Image (cartoon, rainbow, N blue to C red; front, side):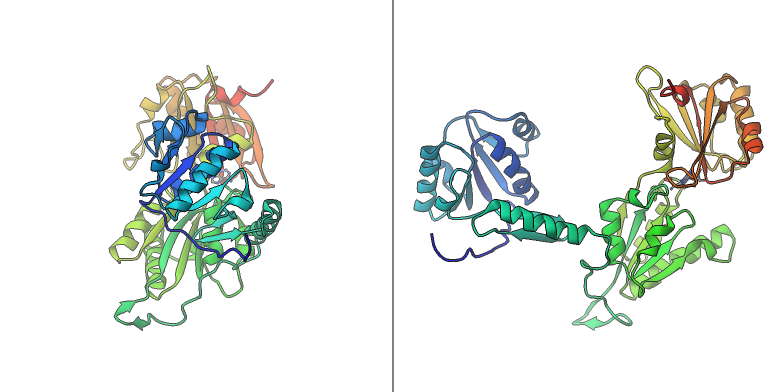
Length: 414
Ligand code: SAH
């Protein structure tokens, strides 16, 4: 075949795509077709377990037999994912008769369409054709992926809207807000999606616990609001943060609200979501790696362990157990056998451990405290429920710290 390939982005949602073959090639091709929303018909006497899982989940239709030309009736595209040249040629011929493009795994030169090597970054898809050489395509694709994935700023940034809301034919340009979990401290523990949104932001509103190195890498023109420096009491400060998020978004800005750990674990993310929703500002939530699980993990404490703990409970220690404001039933927690993870617990640790022991949790239950987990300042203290509050004071541990109570504390110590 001569001539250069003509690239297209096929919009396959709801459109029939036939895949002939149920082996390794089909297993690799089917997920992208499903992701595109295609109505996939798989024709093959045999299936790999991964393909069978798609069938069982109802994501595609399977005809457990060999291909017949009528399988292509109503199809927009066909993938001949079989090694057998004669079988693939039969699929090709039936496709050509119906003017349907046919991708062939067995022989690229005989195919009417080629699948590119692909890398996806949020809304951006980069597809590379290697002039008939799939290895060349993959090499170039890998280089592009590295470039887009490199923490090098705004390659993927949409054009920045400048100034006040523009009136574009009656449609007001509004920005948007993303509530992004930054992870527990190590800047590499933000999610890929969170990182991408950060590189796209015009405004970043960051918490005290957000890894500083993430902020270090922002473009110089990004407006950085340090939410921990807002000079009011906690509830006024929250109103002020909500106001900043809404105002900037209504001014057309892309706003990232960056929070330590996960936005919804003691992060007041829900309040910010409601404030944005009330103002008609679109909001996305990007979950984060929460310190409740990650900080014990990096200190060698799994929150569950076979035959040791079949549950873990995460609780805030911010409000003292005897306070009328407490929403936590410490006596109920004391009756549990599993792992207890206490965040914001250092200040009230003496009262908390005393309450747990008073309500029946054994004083010799192992306990650990991890300060500044996942950072270079990480410190670990092992103790028992009865002694942990004193030991923390003696060791001079400071917040932020996670307290873990339960037999899992020693599960990995040999
Ligand atoms: N949304 C956060 C938690 C916010 S509450 C998350 O999902 O992780 C703040 C508390 O989290 C701190 O008081 C401390 O108990 C805990 N914390 C957060 N980061 C921590 C870290 N790196 N090391 C130890 N504790 C941490």
